[in-house]
Image (cartoon, rainbow, N blue to C red; front, side):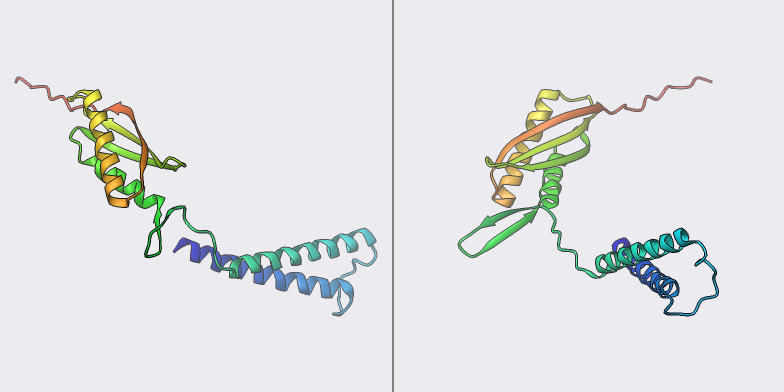
Length: 179
């Protein structure tokens, strides 16, 4: 929605600046009679024409940008099968890895980053743990879950799963009050 609004605003801006610069060029070139007396100062006259031409060229560029189609595609992993091509977005793979890591008990606040290499996917998981479980066991389980789930679901080989334990959640401590 914001992208459409931005394009609409850019379109209106470029159109209005373009119209204003064309009027300024016509006024300064003498094509339209003017009542301004800037002809007495040649430097101001030349500067005004140069600024108007630059604004006109910028408005043409902005007008083009506002109307062109966005050709940039999201990063994806491409596979070829006997039936045709398959494209899986990196965002989909990130969400799959988060889903798999979220199944491990004791893991919270997950973030995922995917890199595509020649050997396969390199997945980095950032997590916060609860501190009640063994960290080597937790990280091994997260690595196994993510590796198996992503590889089985997408069919793309997973080369590496790295787990970064960012922090430990603080369990709320309740003090009993004696009255």
